Structures are given as C-alpha cells and as structure tokens.
Length: 454
Image (spheres, rainbow, N blue to C red):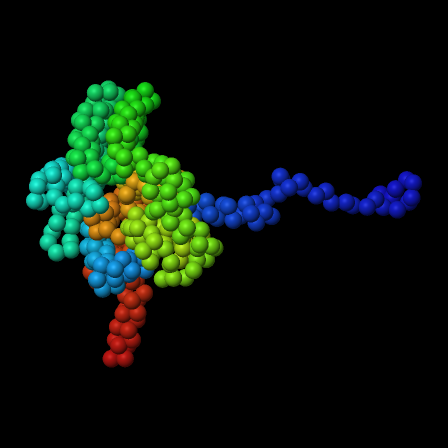
C-alpha cells in the first residue's frame, strides 16, 4: 500500500538479529569450541593422550639425556653416549613392561598388588644391610647389580603403594566399610608409614614426599572426611618439619628458594641459581640442541634432576612449554579415566598413578624454577635413571589398560578392527572372513565359467 503522505510504497527494512541470537553456524569461534569439545569427548581421547603423550615425553627425554649427559660422561672418562645407552636400554625394557601392563586384565593387576608390595618392602629393607646397599649423593637407597648398574627400590615402592592401596580400598568399598574411619586408615596408613620409614632411613626425602602425595591422593579418592584428611596432613607436615629442622642440608635447600646468588642466606645455592641461569639464557627458541653452556660443569646433575633447565636453555620457552603441555595432557587423561570408570579399583589405581606422575613433575619443575626446594626427584619419563623409568612406564601401561577397558572405548576399538578378520555378522564370510564383495566376485566368476562351458 502507498504511503498516505508521499504516495510511495513503504521501504522494507531487515531487522538485524543481535549477536546473542545468532546461530552456531554464524559464529566461527563457537563452531571451533564445539568441534574441540566433541573431539575431547570421544571415547578414545584418553587412550590416545596417554599413549601419545607418554611416548613423546620418553623420546624427547632420550634426546635431552644424550645432549645433557655428554660432558658429564667425558669428565668421568666415559664415552659421550654412555648415559644415553643406559637410558635407551631402560626405555626399551620399560616399553616391554608398558606393553605387557596395557594388555593385562584388571584381575591380574589386582593379583600382582601383594607380590609387588612384598618385593618392594624386601628390597627396601635390603638396602639398609651393610655390604648390599650403597650410597649415592648421600642417600642410602641403592643396590648395586654389578658394574655400573644400580636399582633404587624406593621407586618401585611407589608402584607397590598404588596397586596395593587401590586393591585394598576397592575391596573395602565393595563391603561398604569406607564409611568408618578405622577401615579407611587401617592398614593403608600404617603400611604407607612403614614404606616412608624405610625410605627415610636412607635419607631420601624427595621420594618420601611423592609417596605421601600418593597416600593423600588415595584417601581423597576414597572420600575421606575433611577432618580426617586435615588430621593426617597435619601429622605428615609435622613429621616433615622435624626432619627438615634436624638436617642442615635440607635447611639449606629450603633457604635457596628464589635465590639469585650462589651464596644466599649463608647457604650454597649454586645448583639452584645456575638452573635459573640456564632457563634465562634460552630465550624463546633456545640456543640450539646440544649448545647448552651450563652443562659444561656449571650445573650439577644436568641430566637427572635439572634436565628441565638444560631443556629450557637449548630448546627455549617453546621447548619447556611443550613439555608442560604433554604432562598436562597426561594428567588430564588420567583424571578422565579415573572419573569415568565404574570399577573402584580402576578409579583408585588411575587416580594414584596420576597423582604420582603429576606431583613428581610439579616438584621437579618447581625446584628448577626456584619456586620449591630442591627435592632430588627426577622428572618422570624424562630424566636419566632406569630405576625411575621402569616402574613409571609400567604405571603408564596401567593407565592405557584402564583407558582401553572403558565400554565406549572397547566398542570404538572393536569397530576399528580390520574387515578381513570380521565374521559374517560384520559383513564378511563366516568361513574365510573375506568381505562380501569378494564373495560376489567369486560367484560371478563361477557363473561366467559355467556359461562358457555350456
């Protein structure tokens, strides 16, 4: 209809919808978020994150061990690749353990809990026997296997506590006993304290801290009341404070937090300060692989406890952030496995392994950054040390087995089986397992031969 004033038809104007009412198709950021969320929610996400993340950390760790240990080996009149070859051998054995653990059923893991605990306790007690145990860097926590090979039984104590504690709590949960304090604490806490006592007899407080973190992780997953949790934490903190106060070496390490000079507050902070120097000189992309300056005798334990500092110097901020991202992905996947399962043993074991690896990585990296005291613990899967690498790779195999055992993951893996192995119900021949199209081609060829003979 024409307008009464101008005689012209009215102009049709389109009303623009507000941004809040636009569809997902009009918002690329929203699309990207939904795609990422869909990818994270896939059944095999945790499986691929654990497998891929652990393998990448191990391979990058081998590269950095080779780079960081060359000068130390030459100073000891050894071949430059000496430490790398030992670490590579440990990684190969650990890979076999990872594969075996990832293929073992959950029942077999539970059956191994008590034998592993008994073996770990026996070896940890054997360390204190004169003539058998040996001291390294002031800690009596090693057993010599002859030649240049030693094992540290306390590293296997971490795995033993995870498996045994998870089996114990799972059995008590099945019987509905975890609502009582005595069943939640006994015998889990006394056995954990026994392991801690054997470790502290050798003076290794760093490993004792990791074992304490595993204990608290298991109690947290078991639903310990806040009062109980705070009480156990207070007792552990008091014992730790007494052990620190009575040791000048530990007090010196505590005084080196945030130190900027080799001599700070009367303590020798040479290692902590040169670790910061290594990180600071790396810049964004580092000085190049093998071009570290601090590893030339300035930075002690460059290939073990402070390998993250050498990584920052040679690969820069990009390299260190990549390592942090891999550990974050591994921790996320472990939490996801523990949160999605209905099996209490799987939940406790996955949570214990995730607590172990995450806490050890935080303590090691925090010490290198000057945020925490130097505890003398290696970076999991990354630092040099076969005794630490073997049980950690077995624990990663546990997480892989648990991730594969999820119902949705099992179904997704079954759908990815090759078609040549399927039965008739999946589209193939029941006798030969061949696809239907092959059977069709065979029938056509047979019919052609028959018509030709006629």
